[in-house]
Figure 1 (tube, rainbow, N blue to C red):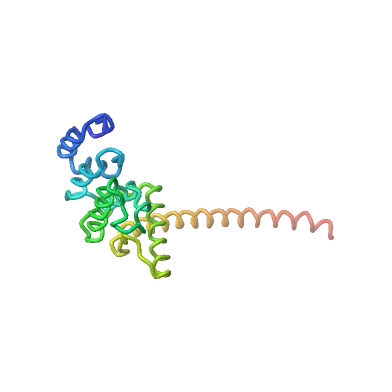
Figure 2: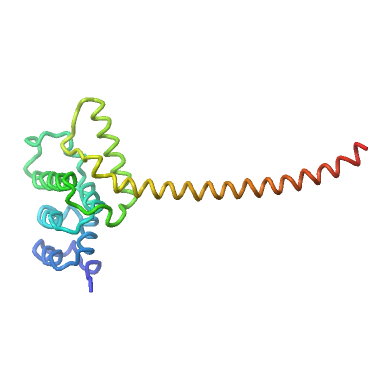
Length: 193
């Protein structure tokens, strides 16, 4: 039985967290990657988890964005304070693995909040390219295709449903409008005649 949901991450030591992460199933590890609190022991726990096989791309991206990479993206490595070098290095590792295709494509969809962060990140990268600059972490667009493909598929399905509803409404209106127009003609005809 997976006890990941019952484990209190905030009240345990780094060693206990590592024992728990190592004993977790692949699915639980994937969930831990998505939900781990970066104010705890990210360099150790996420450092180990991010190097494990079976982690999904959405989980790796969620972990990356949960680490708040914006704060370091345009800061030269030498300017990152000693307090944050481990976090920045972990973000380096996660991004490198993302770009290398290490993570499984779309094991589980990203939450909308992190999908919005990814959209913003990709938009920023495009602006950087246009402005001839580059941030510390560039996520290769080819690696993101599986995530955007599933998002596109969901959007296309939503549009298909909406068009079907609009077509039904138009048919109903046409049918209702035809009978109304027929009724109006019947009413107008005696007045004209």
